[in-house]
Length: 362
Image (cartoon, rainbow, N blue to C red):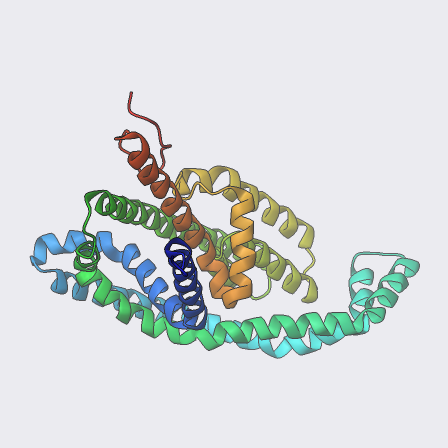
């Protein structure tokens, strides 16, 4: 008579290992985030490295050449544009406390109302409303400041990520082959090879598409804000381009920041600015993103929203950025696992590739 059910014991052991793995991922999330960003950076520059490798005949030399070119481009950009961005950012940071005080006290309603010809009753109502919600406005400003400080604390990633990416660029393929050596059966090896190929395709498309969209936003914001003489145009345009890297929430935050700073600075043409922000968002969502991003993610909007909220709770702003590719990666693993299970039950299926559905062999 057996006192221990072996199937139940295996199930409990598997569940325990799974829980321990989740706990490890949670407590080591900061280190894992650095490695994930390094992988993303490697995917971004890998095409250029591969092209240069044809000339240098060596992977390491090609990586060194690309990194040297990137350093030259960054130094050139910050030499010509960096000082002006720094000056505008300093002026904005110095004026923000007084602007926030004007809003929380309600005095901004008087200035704004007189400039736009509002009635005295309307101005008074807005002033009373702002003054009555002074504590909430101050609390909101403090939370925004904490988020900004959280981003600043992760500035070390700017240095660590490119260094880690060197190893993925140079030895990434050998890492993948080493993982496959631990698999003994052919179906499991096919499963892992399929997951690896699909992840390579998805991540490469996603990173390059995000960079393209961010560059488009950066250029469009700078040109339009400069032409319209919006205060702190360089700072706002740069922040708008950077926010494009954060899926779903980033573009909305960028629009709110640009419009909010303009209103607080008493910018007179805020209606035109609002129309531009709405039109550019529509252009991004319905024209540029579908063409550039293509079917690289194939995520349902509800799944994307869940990923963004969960990522923000787990790892803050960086978690928001990583949420979409992580959710897309989980979807790839799930679809490949379905194919693996179907093969075990019914025999060979049509070859599955990223972006296609699973279907039985005809």
